[in-house]
Length: 224
Image (cartoon, rainbow, N blue to C red):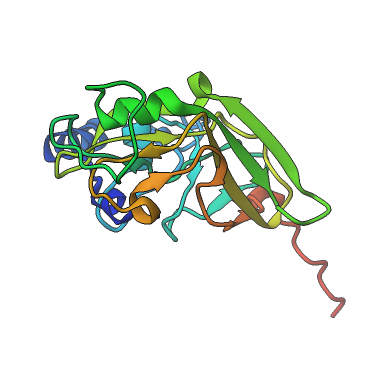
């Protein structure tokens, strides 16, 4: 399937400016409260898309960008992916032969939202440590979003997960649709449609859980 359009999703300039201003005017953790935990680093793609800001997530995010592949021990984390974008509206939608949306006149993004059933997150797929979590649409699907070039999109964003053990892990995302969905951008079923049922929505994104500095034990000193 073709998801290149999703990479164009970015924080709008006004939102980006507001975020920078807020960051500049906010007191640091040490100035406000020496005991307060510092804010977690945001997951920001190379095009400026700030996953934390757009999805309103306070926890550290694991996502496709290579800069978003680290969490710390004992730290809850959230799994996000690039979303699914569609044609702007029903009038401009172009579908493959024989395909019909859920009902006449429905916008392609609303068709996707209506057919979205759930998202499944698999930690360490194919290993003895594999664990699977499934969440219904109302728990994960973020809607009402637009790419920087005006295409509407929706994205599954998990609830926070408990911390995993220190080391290398993988996270794989699947979504379940009640019926076939086509995005209305082009009449290419392979590139622009998602089949009914459960499908893989991401790669096996690898990430690291690192020990916190305070958790790292210093090696015993050798006698002189």
